[in-house]
Length: 63
Image 1 (tube, rainbow, N blue to C red):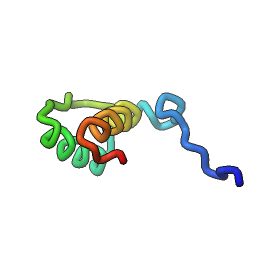
Image 2 (image 1 turned 45 degrees about the vertical axis):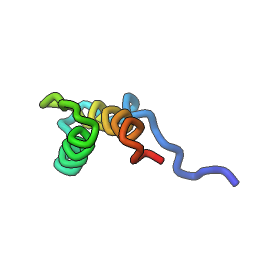
Image 3 (image 1 turned 90 degrees about the vertical axis):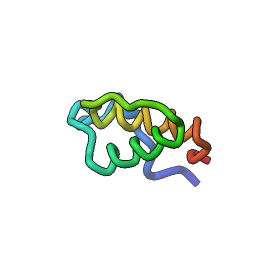
Image 4 (image 1 turned 90 degrees about the horizontal axis):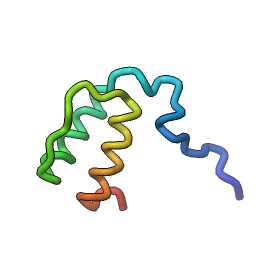
């Protein structure tokens, strides 16, 4: 069975340059607190998505 909804790389998103959404920012700050890291302000949607993936790996939430 093939996946009919392949995951697109955030750098290929047409809206990737728009500011991060509220839910992205909220989740980023939750993950950053758990990872004891700082999250820079002003991330784009694509940057926020990539940082979320990175922090999920670090905190074990990405499993």
